[in-house]
Image 1 (cartoon, helix red, strand yellow):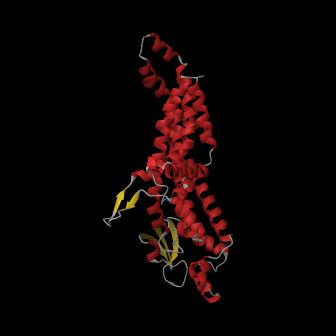
Image 2: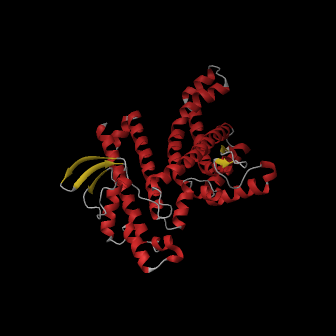
Image 3: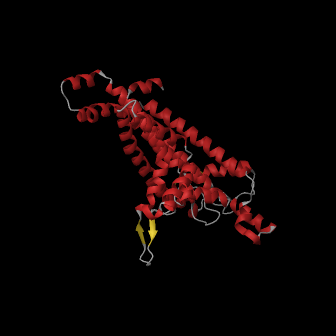
Amino acid sequence: MLQYIGKRLFYGFLVILGVVTLVFFLFNILPGDPARMMLGQRADAESIEIINKDLGRDRPIGQQYISYLNDLAPISFHNNRNRGSYYYLDPEKYEPYATLFSVGSVSVVAKAPYLRRSYQTKRKVSDVILTAFPQTAVLALTSMLFAMVVGVLIGILSALHKGTWIDRLALFLSTLGMSLPSFFAAILIAWLFAFVLSDVTHLNMFGNLYTVDDYGSGEYLDLKNLILPALTLGIRPLAVLVELTKSSMIDAMSQDYIRTARAKGMSHGRLIFRHALRNALNPIVTSVSGWLAGLLAGAVFVEYVFDWKGMGVVIVDGLEKYDFPVVMGSILFICILLVVINILTDILYGVLDPRVRIAK
């Protein structure tokens, strides 16, 4: 078991290292000068040179890459004497940290990964992410809950009425849901429910989880703004869960133990929900875990359309302003989150089914 866990962790580390490398070189060869964006109309050659030197962008790309890895690594090497060195152990950057040992002027320290600072706001990228991610997490969890409840119920109805108009309608809606791009679906739903039908729904086209009170008494929780983004983001997993639940239920209902229970006179409702659905849930739970990770990463377009102040808005704003540390840090955070969820899922499978460990 330990060997299996170690192998999963090693593969996860390789994936993260590959994404770090790809993201770094991609954003350092893109056209555009962050220094010029920061200075605006005041930009001149001397000021741009000073800004680039302060950002470390005046050095060879290889040195910049090593410095970036050093900042990200939880165990990193630093010069604790030369303040002019880019590798100087700056408490303002790495606090809190713990010095493990020193050899001459080089210190080996343990610290949290340092994602650097925003070019525009000078805030730590980690602080920007920690502010935005809870909004994305709430949206993703709500969307997944909506998709699970509605998708499983429609799937059960479709399985029990196989070949009828209910089954055909469920198939049509699930196919439509899987084929609709999230960006287009967000625009369509916002226009229909928050503009055309606004007098009926009283929903806002734009909004956040918290709304500023008009009378200046602070912020209040406004769950109404969560309805349309969650509906939009939940359409695709809902469509998948409908078909998955239908096929799992049809398979479960054809098993011998169901026929035996029916022959003994068990009620129809108890037969479905206590026996058939329980045994049909395994592939559904597997799909939900994968979709939840995907929703956390894929809410960018939906958040941008509804102006939901989550990771999506942070990434798009960073791209528009050439705020590369924010964009790079957000992408890496999402990547690490996906890798961790996948590793935990693999380990859980290995615990529940030893055949998985042997196969992998």
